[in-house]
Amino acid sequence: MIITIFGEYSKIPEDIETLSVHYEGDFLCGASIISKNFAMTAATCTDGKVASDLSVKAGTDKLSRGGSVHDVEEIIQNTGFNQQELDYDISLLRVRKPFRYSKRVQPIALPAVAEPGKDIGEHSAVDISGWGSSSVGGSISDQLQHVILHTINQTACDQGDSGGPLVSNGIQYGIVSFGYGCADVRYPGVYSRVAGLRDWIKENAGV
Image 1 (cartoon, rainbow, N blue to C red):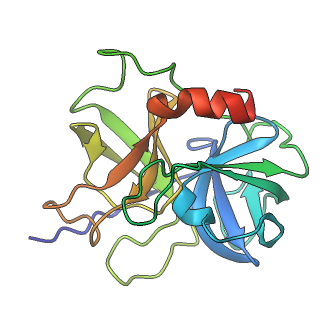
Image 2 (image 1 turned 135 degrees about the vertical axis):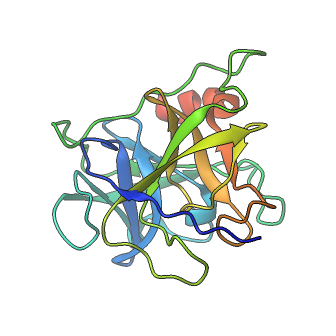
């Protein structure tokens, strides 16, 4: 059985940390603000690309207008990333022009280093935001969308758009990594676990 999950339209004050990543001007992926100088996304979004071709847009829930554009100065892709296995699916984007915090631009909190029993639990409600398609082969949305889902053994049933944040109670626990099809209940979407990558994030971004 295939189920199409329709997200609700979202406004930036609600998903204020969410960024759009653009490749040569075209929408590529989602991302999140983690500091004034860094955004976080999936390595699947940056693999094989150079920083000068990438930019991120902050402070707008529309792809077509508004917000501030920040050119990417450096891509820091986790060296453990593997296109076949999709392990360590995380990249940091150092922006040339720092994010200016406001009512529409704010960073997301990150979890502490993973400890047994202290990570996000099974059946936890999570918020996933992005501009991805809600059906297989569908077009991207110009308006930011989000959906509330529940984790299953630290995964959640949705595809979403790669690089976007998975958030629970104001903390980003995951990065949208990959899925089979779109919202197919047989194949839950897979998310990079931020808590397990905290040492690497701190070493490379200082947060």
